[in-house]
Image 1 (cartoon, rainbow, N blue to C red):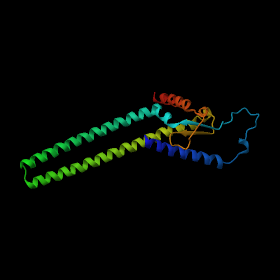
Image 2: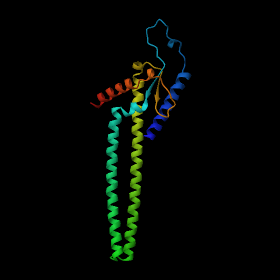
Image 3: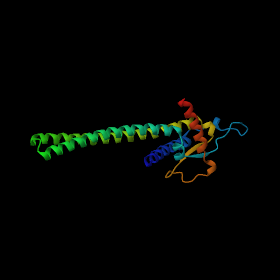
Image 4: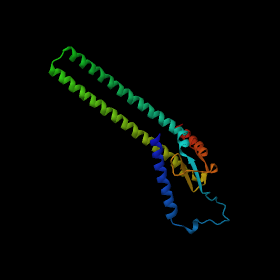
Length: 198
């Protein structure tokens, strides 16, 4: 979860920096300045969402997490199966050597085979852990991208110039509860996601 917070913080920081850059370096078009008599709604300024609440209550997060947990269980089962086989072979080797049932040359071959099997087991474990970690990072980026894309596509519904992401350790240390649109965004996200799943 700590890695998720760090990844979200980095993505949100970059998004905020990009929006800040666009806002202050963009060309000012005289046509974009609205006449007070126009009926178009002006953007209200800044709002925020609680990123942790938004992600952990988002249905997409639960679905992706279940997929990841299934992959993790499968990887653990594969690792346990190979680990059990290694332990069986090691016990067999020790038994044969202690009883003097094999020659020294055969014992050396068995020992070498056990060492190789152990190295393969360590490599498999490391690869499985690395793959699962990478999949978790991709999952987190996909969820944040989905949320960001949703907010950009529906910006007229929220009518804010900036929507900040607030979480523990983020640059947003305080936000007035009147500016918190987490539940509104969460409801809309879940509605859209459920419709897409069907």
